[in-house]
Length: 533
Image (cartoon, rainbow, N blue to C red; front, side):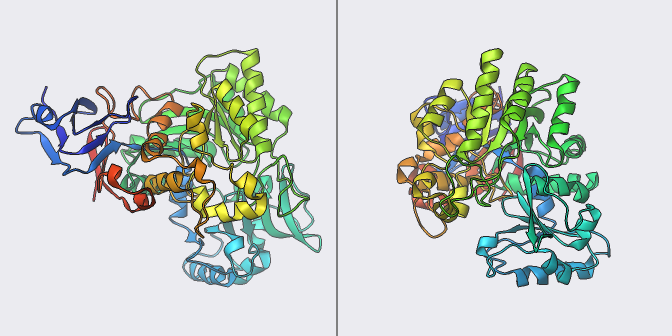
């Protein structure tokens, strides 16, 4: 059999069960047909075969990000970037909004994202007064870096029909000054007001395409899309794929920022379940949202925050609600998961999964916990026993780690986004970024799994650092396992899909603290080159 493309003379990290390293790979159409030595690989070539000399560089499986908000990432690329260090004060945010207002027709939305109040000079959230000053004739929404808190001006509140004395929704908080809401919305209050600022379907298709182009440049070939815009987004994904605009593979979670329980109920009524679809677009798990964000901080913890002994975070759902949805989804054949950050929330989803398995035993369910940020030995033991797949975000330690130590205390911070403990216990944990909460770059994510350093250089528990091959496995094979696809992708083996990434050097020769400097030079999906540096 003649190959369409051959990679040879390289360091091919196969991520097979033995972590085998070979020098060459041959692919035909969209499948891998040979792995081994370069001399034998060349035998698969003819005059039409593309030969790529790796010159010692690494070839790895296509990266899999197991929790990423694709449409939100794309939409953010078209909005005002309020991230630190580019923006360091509310006054600078106001200036950016004023500039946007000059080119945005009156009455149309101005959107911003990524601000972190703890890094602003004023050390507070932008509020209604600030945003009214910047754009009195446009509705304005600014979403905090965690995507669990947002700030709104009067026009936005007016569209949402929120009066100054409106009560807090269940599982949410609206900040107030002198008893009147000031435009800052937390958790369910934030989720509910998003209903009035939803983008149009065409905007979402464009957003998905923008995200696709960014992600394939970073070597990401599959994403587990963690949702956001509900049924509107599901349709946008299908349209974009049908029109040939998306090369990246998607495993879609059933989740909507707006009225998520209703969205889930609709899918439970249809009768389809996890696995419906094909290699490019497949239904993933039902996803709940139990608690808040690690950096807000609004994560639901068992013990009070060190920074505030009166605070244990925000729960968006009761145990009874979680148990009910998880049980019915599990019974219907769905993989189930939930956003769960604090140890109280993680314990709740574990309890619900355990209860569902007791009533309706099911082998190889692969139920997940998104983030699974705060764990202890008891939690880890239950995750192992129940066969749950955690989805940690190593890069959060860089972006938010300094705040974890302040808000939760060093002991709890040291058990956050654990890595090595999963490997030591034989727990399959799939790596993810939660982009656009932070950076999608899988190499940077692997760097943080290997180094666990914060922005200020603090190391958060060096005992939880992993090796380069373990970090690579988290972002390849383990991601495939988390979507029931380990027989098709996640490693470089004969018969698997030809999703591959050429890196700038042999990563086995790169010191752990230099991993972040490695770059992607080529991305292949389905045997086709979709990006070349």
